[in-house]
Image (tube, rainbow, N blue to C red; front, top):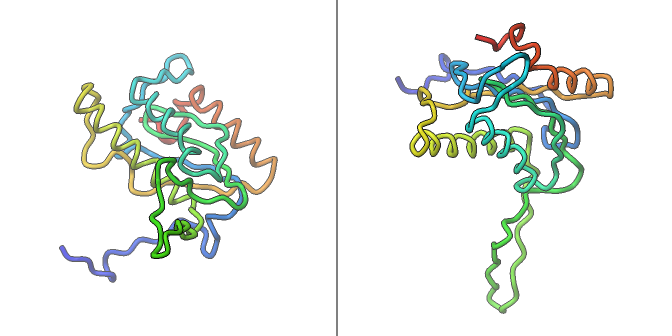
Length: 189
């Protein structure tokens, strides 16, 4: 069926008018499509990551290599979802690949790299999801990881802007205790 804006419309869950590239702390939740448990299991309140789950965690830890203006705080890979706190620091933009060269202009002088638009939380989460999907597909093909139906991740992700220290502490505790509270989690299946 062709796209029809009167039928096929999605309301954004983002805060209208908010600049998601600005400095701040963000709580992020990303869910596996169909809530399939692909990243490990909870045993006695502890998350036991499988190879795929370890890959997800490792790719998250590499994200500051791609985006120089972020700091990673607490995170947890769960069987079928991922929680994290990401901080955007002021002023930095996307990191240029170390081996990237700039072509000289007509006078033989190297041209600078054009300024880039600041990356948003959506850009960063999208990059993470894409990288993890590519690596997961590689694991399916080469290592026999569980297959998934169509897409690895749900189309959207959930984020919350952390506005004060009390909220930060509450969310940090939630992330740290998420494996212990797995059976009470709304994403438990």
